[in-house]
Image (cartoon, rainbow, N blue to C red; front, side):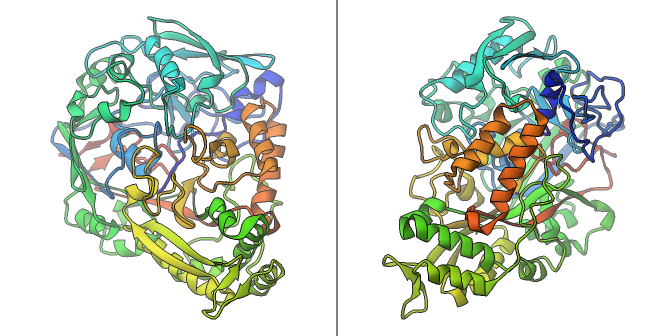
Length: 607
């Protein structure tokens, strides 16, 4: 599993047509085809979004007809989810794997990073008239599926869209994963009581397709105050009280064991308009990936989710045809807590320490020792196939001597115990990783051995996955290794660097430091760099692809230059892996933030 940011693909390209800007063709672009309005099985659909030829909707995915129905689908995954509130108060991948089948968004993306409508009939763009840009303002047409209903039979209408926007902006909100960004730019919404909504934005907002993800029901949200929503709504012990929109809805959650689901009859009758392929679904939780692999080998599960290249060796006893591997935009990285470094060593000391850490990490050794040479080391978190990737931002080399000199020049000196000290504070750090990912603990221990000659010590600590990724209101403030509360020095996990420039805004802009204000955002680095903020602001608000590309180039130069002391160190890109029974159909491994269960409504199994 991985920590994921739930944003989508190349949204800036959607708006480019308004200014006549040309876009660099995406390597994953497919030829345009006839437009599809089928929300649950996206097929190749029309029109490159902009004149430059980036086509956001022409997917290669086409579901085959269901050939058999009935029985119980059993899915395996390692690690219990942390919350049902995925993408609202947290972005843990397990939460989406477990609950995205119950909640649908307005739009989603396929395994080949193309948009399709979930609760809508189309994807609004400038090219198809769904987006209208007026100077620095814009309007977005939202065409909900006529007749669609929530699981309790209430209609899904623009009333839900209107209410959710106000609910997100409520002053009592605390700990939203992406804050109020985008929602605060909507000045009004037309279409109350209908399925045809218009979002009026007071300013350009590039990542608009990531809003209302998922859409939540007005009549259910109204049952609780905003301040107590996480206590009163979608409670893990009362899942049947919840209201849902997706194909399968949870009925019982036995933590660290399983979640049980039943088909959402309203989804199948009013949205998909067919019969469900399964009578029941079970998601089974394993202690670690080895146990999950063993469970698959023993026919306990039909599908095993959320593996990467580091677990492939353990799958040697599994039929190779059942091991589904795809290259994708996920990258392993070390997030350093820059506030922690500054508190210990001051501004100058923190900068020197972070610069030295970049040079001190031997990524080639990590590749050979941890992955067996299965990956390519990286220093840039941006997906190389992204249209805004800057190949000129070349990688620096491991240089222990240079790291040592940087630290010495900054005044760090070794004490009697061999550890560096500055201002009376030792260079001894808490390194965190989830307990069910042994390779991450191994990596942190290897990092400790690499940095020991410099006088730096990493104390690796393993904790439950939910501890690492729980949101601000979901866990005690002093819990060690929680990223949201900043109780770590360095933590290893993976980001899905989906090729959407807007996705970086929520990770690196200083306004998304969770310590601040309403504790929203995912700037776990606690980085506050005015140049980065400037680049992120440009990315968020511009419709000019060349300006966005220039801003992303500027950011990548900062990210990859050790002298800039950026507190994230990319290690390598992933191969995303899942296990699937040969009897399963319509499995389409999705290495993006939409997760591997993205099209579960199309899955079926031979008799």
